[in-house]
Length: 267
Ligand SMILES: Nc1ncnc2c1ncn2[C@@H]1O[C@H](COP(=O)(O)OP(=O)(O)OP(=O)(O)O)[C@@H](O)[C@H]1O
Image (cartoon, rainbow, N blue to C red; front, side, top):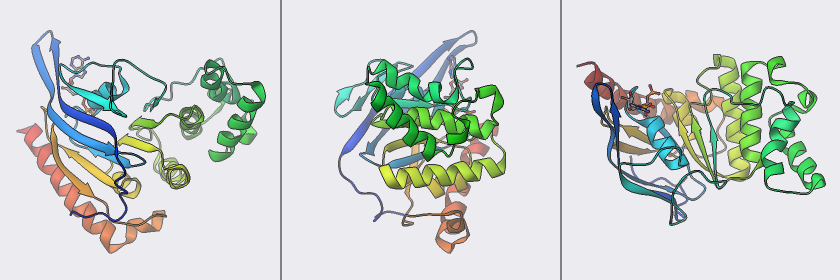
């Protein structure tokens, strides 16, 4: 499964160097991650799959700077990650919108923190409202939106501040199948246009293959990288891509691999 013509190996944007994470809890220590090593190339879309509890969110939180590694380091553009930073945008499964702000104001929020001029803020906000097809809901409040629409606002908000790296923790995990498929298509289209460096966690192998240039399979806890699979399917990709022979071969391979880890957890 090597030799991917899609992954333009420019340079490592994110370096994960021998990361270990141990949590101290009431029932003793939990080694969530141990010896995690890999690079995310600039402009690359990486999806991470693995059994529940293998440390996917912990790894994302460490890259985001929300958690510190017990051992090892993470670098973005060769600079060690120490805490959160505007160059890393995060989208979580729960929408995390400000309920008291309209859709427009939610998207504007991060732009205002950057002290941009109002006409610049208006231009960027319009662009990302268009991108997620929510122009008509610009003055609505989050409680007036469906789950899928809220997640589109969260994605627009993350994109608007133009982070170098977008970290997404099961962003479509709480959505129904139809909204999920629609958002995958929107995210694909956006990535094909802007090629932002993306690190995307999912439980859904189909979702991982349709989006990613490389799929990282993590082993059962303590999580480490079990295998990195190149998805040698050219872009643009559509939902029809999921019916192709190549896609189904990859799905069988990755799913079988993840299932072995799932069985290891249950032993
Ligand atoms: N703050 C914490 N304190 C103690 N243990 C934690 C903490 N955060 C995570 N863990 C433990 O670390 C391990 C990895 O958790 P993590 O949430 O990263 O896994 P995951 O692969 O994202 O799981 P899932 O797919 O179910 O979301 C789990 O055993 C979890 O209980």
